[in-house]
Length: 358
Ligand SMILES: Cc1ncc(COP(=O)(O)O)c(C=O)c1O
Image (tube, rainbow, N blue to C red; front, side, top):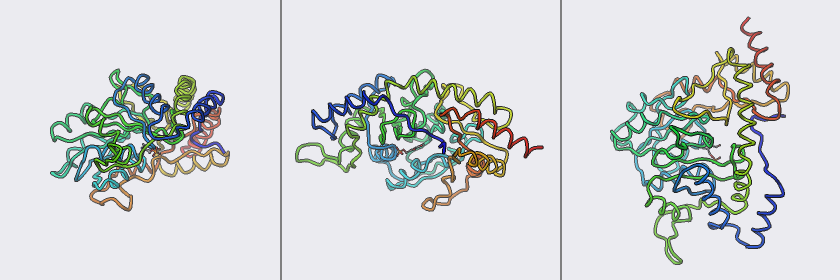
């Protein structure tokens, strides 16, 4: 079966040489030398400051709320991976949804203001499929209402907004380095923190809140990355260009073959193109279902991603239904961008749609 993502494994000999180093030092976790090296290299590679590696993307977002000591409500997108919402709820905050733009699939700034109440403390958008949000408009709203902005940038490792890496935006930006991502550390993630004092605090909160040999200064969590994960990240960084070129070619092929048949995500013109995912939106749920079945018959497994729309989760307040998010969720598929499967996928999509639309 060809799955929607294929895990990339970098050069084995290089990884082994890092494992040798770990065996020599006997340092496996607790802010080891490889984690520190990865943080430094990522800051240089991405052009960001105050980057901390953590255990996974979900804990990265949770850490952001804990650091900012937020209370009340957080206005967020209903169209993202579940962690964007669950991390808000897990930190004792209330997620309040603002519906998405039907073309960019990102939170629509026009809907943010009407979701703000006197209890709102933050806005939590996601750069969906690496498509940059309308950052300037979101900043304007945040400034006007004195709100913090926490971006879920998990899909946006390869994206710049107005010539700066996208992780530079927001009070805190979080990015997952899960094994399925274009840059990964097996499990892992990073947060980038605008405020220097908050960055220092994050180092403590990431490690149980322990701020001295016999002292626990604040409420913390265990969100530490280990040395084997950092070693994977260091190897992956050396091969990012290969992954980038392969995904770029894959995307360009799909655009050429499919642009007349399906709705493609509308890109933010102030940002670079991301090559992380190739989402396609059909005219109806029936079309999506038929294409998915036809692909599965050939052992190709696309993913209905993101589904379900997060306003349908059992643990969120059913304050308002999000019709656009629900609609896009019901007719979207993300298709594989690897293994040379692109011609087969394109052919099946086109043939199925032509038959249905006849
Ligand atoms: C948009 C988004 N946010 C958050 C996460 C959570 O990251 P992790 O799996 O590293 O916890 C993911 C994970 O795949 C994601 O796609």
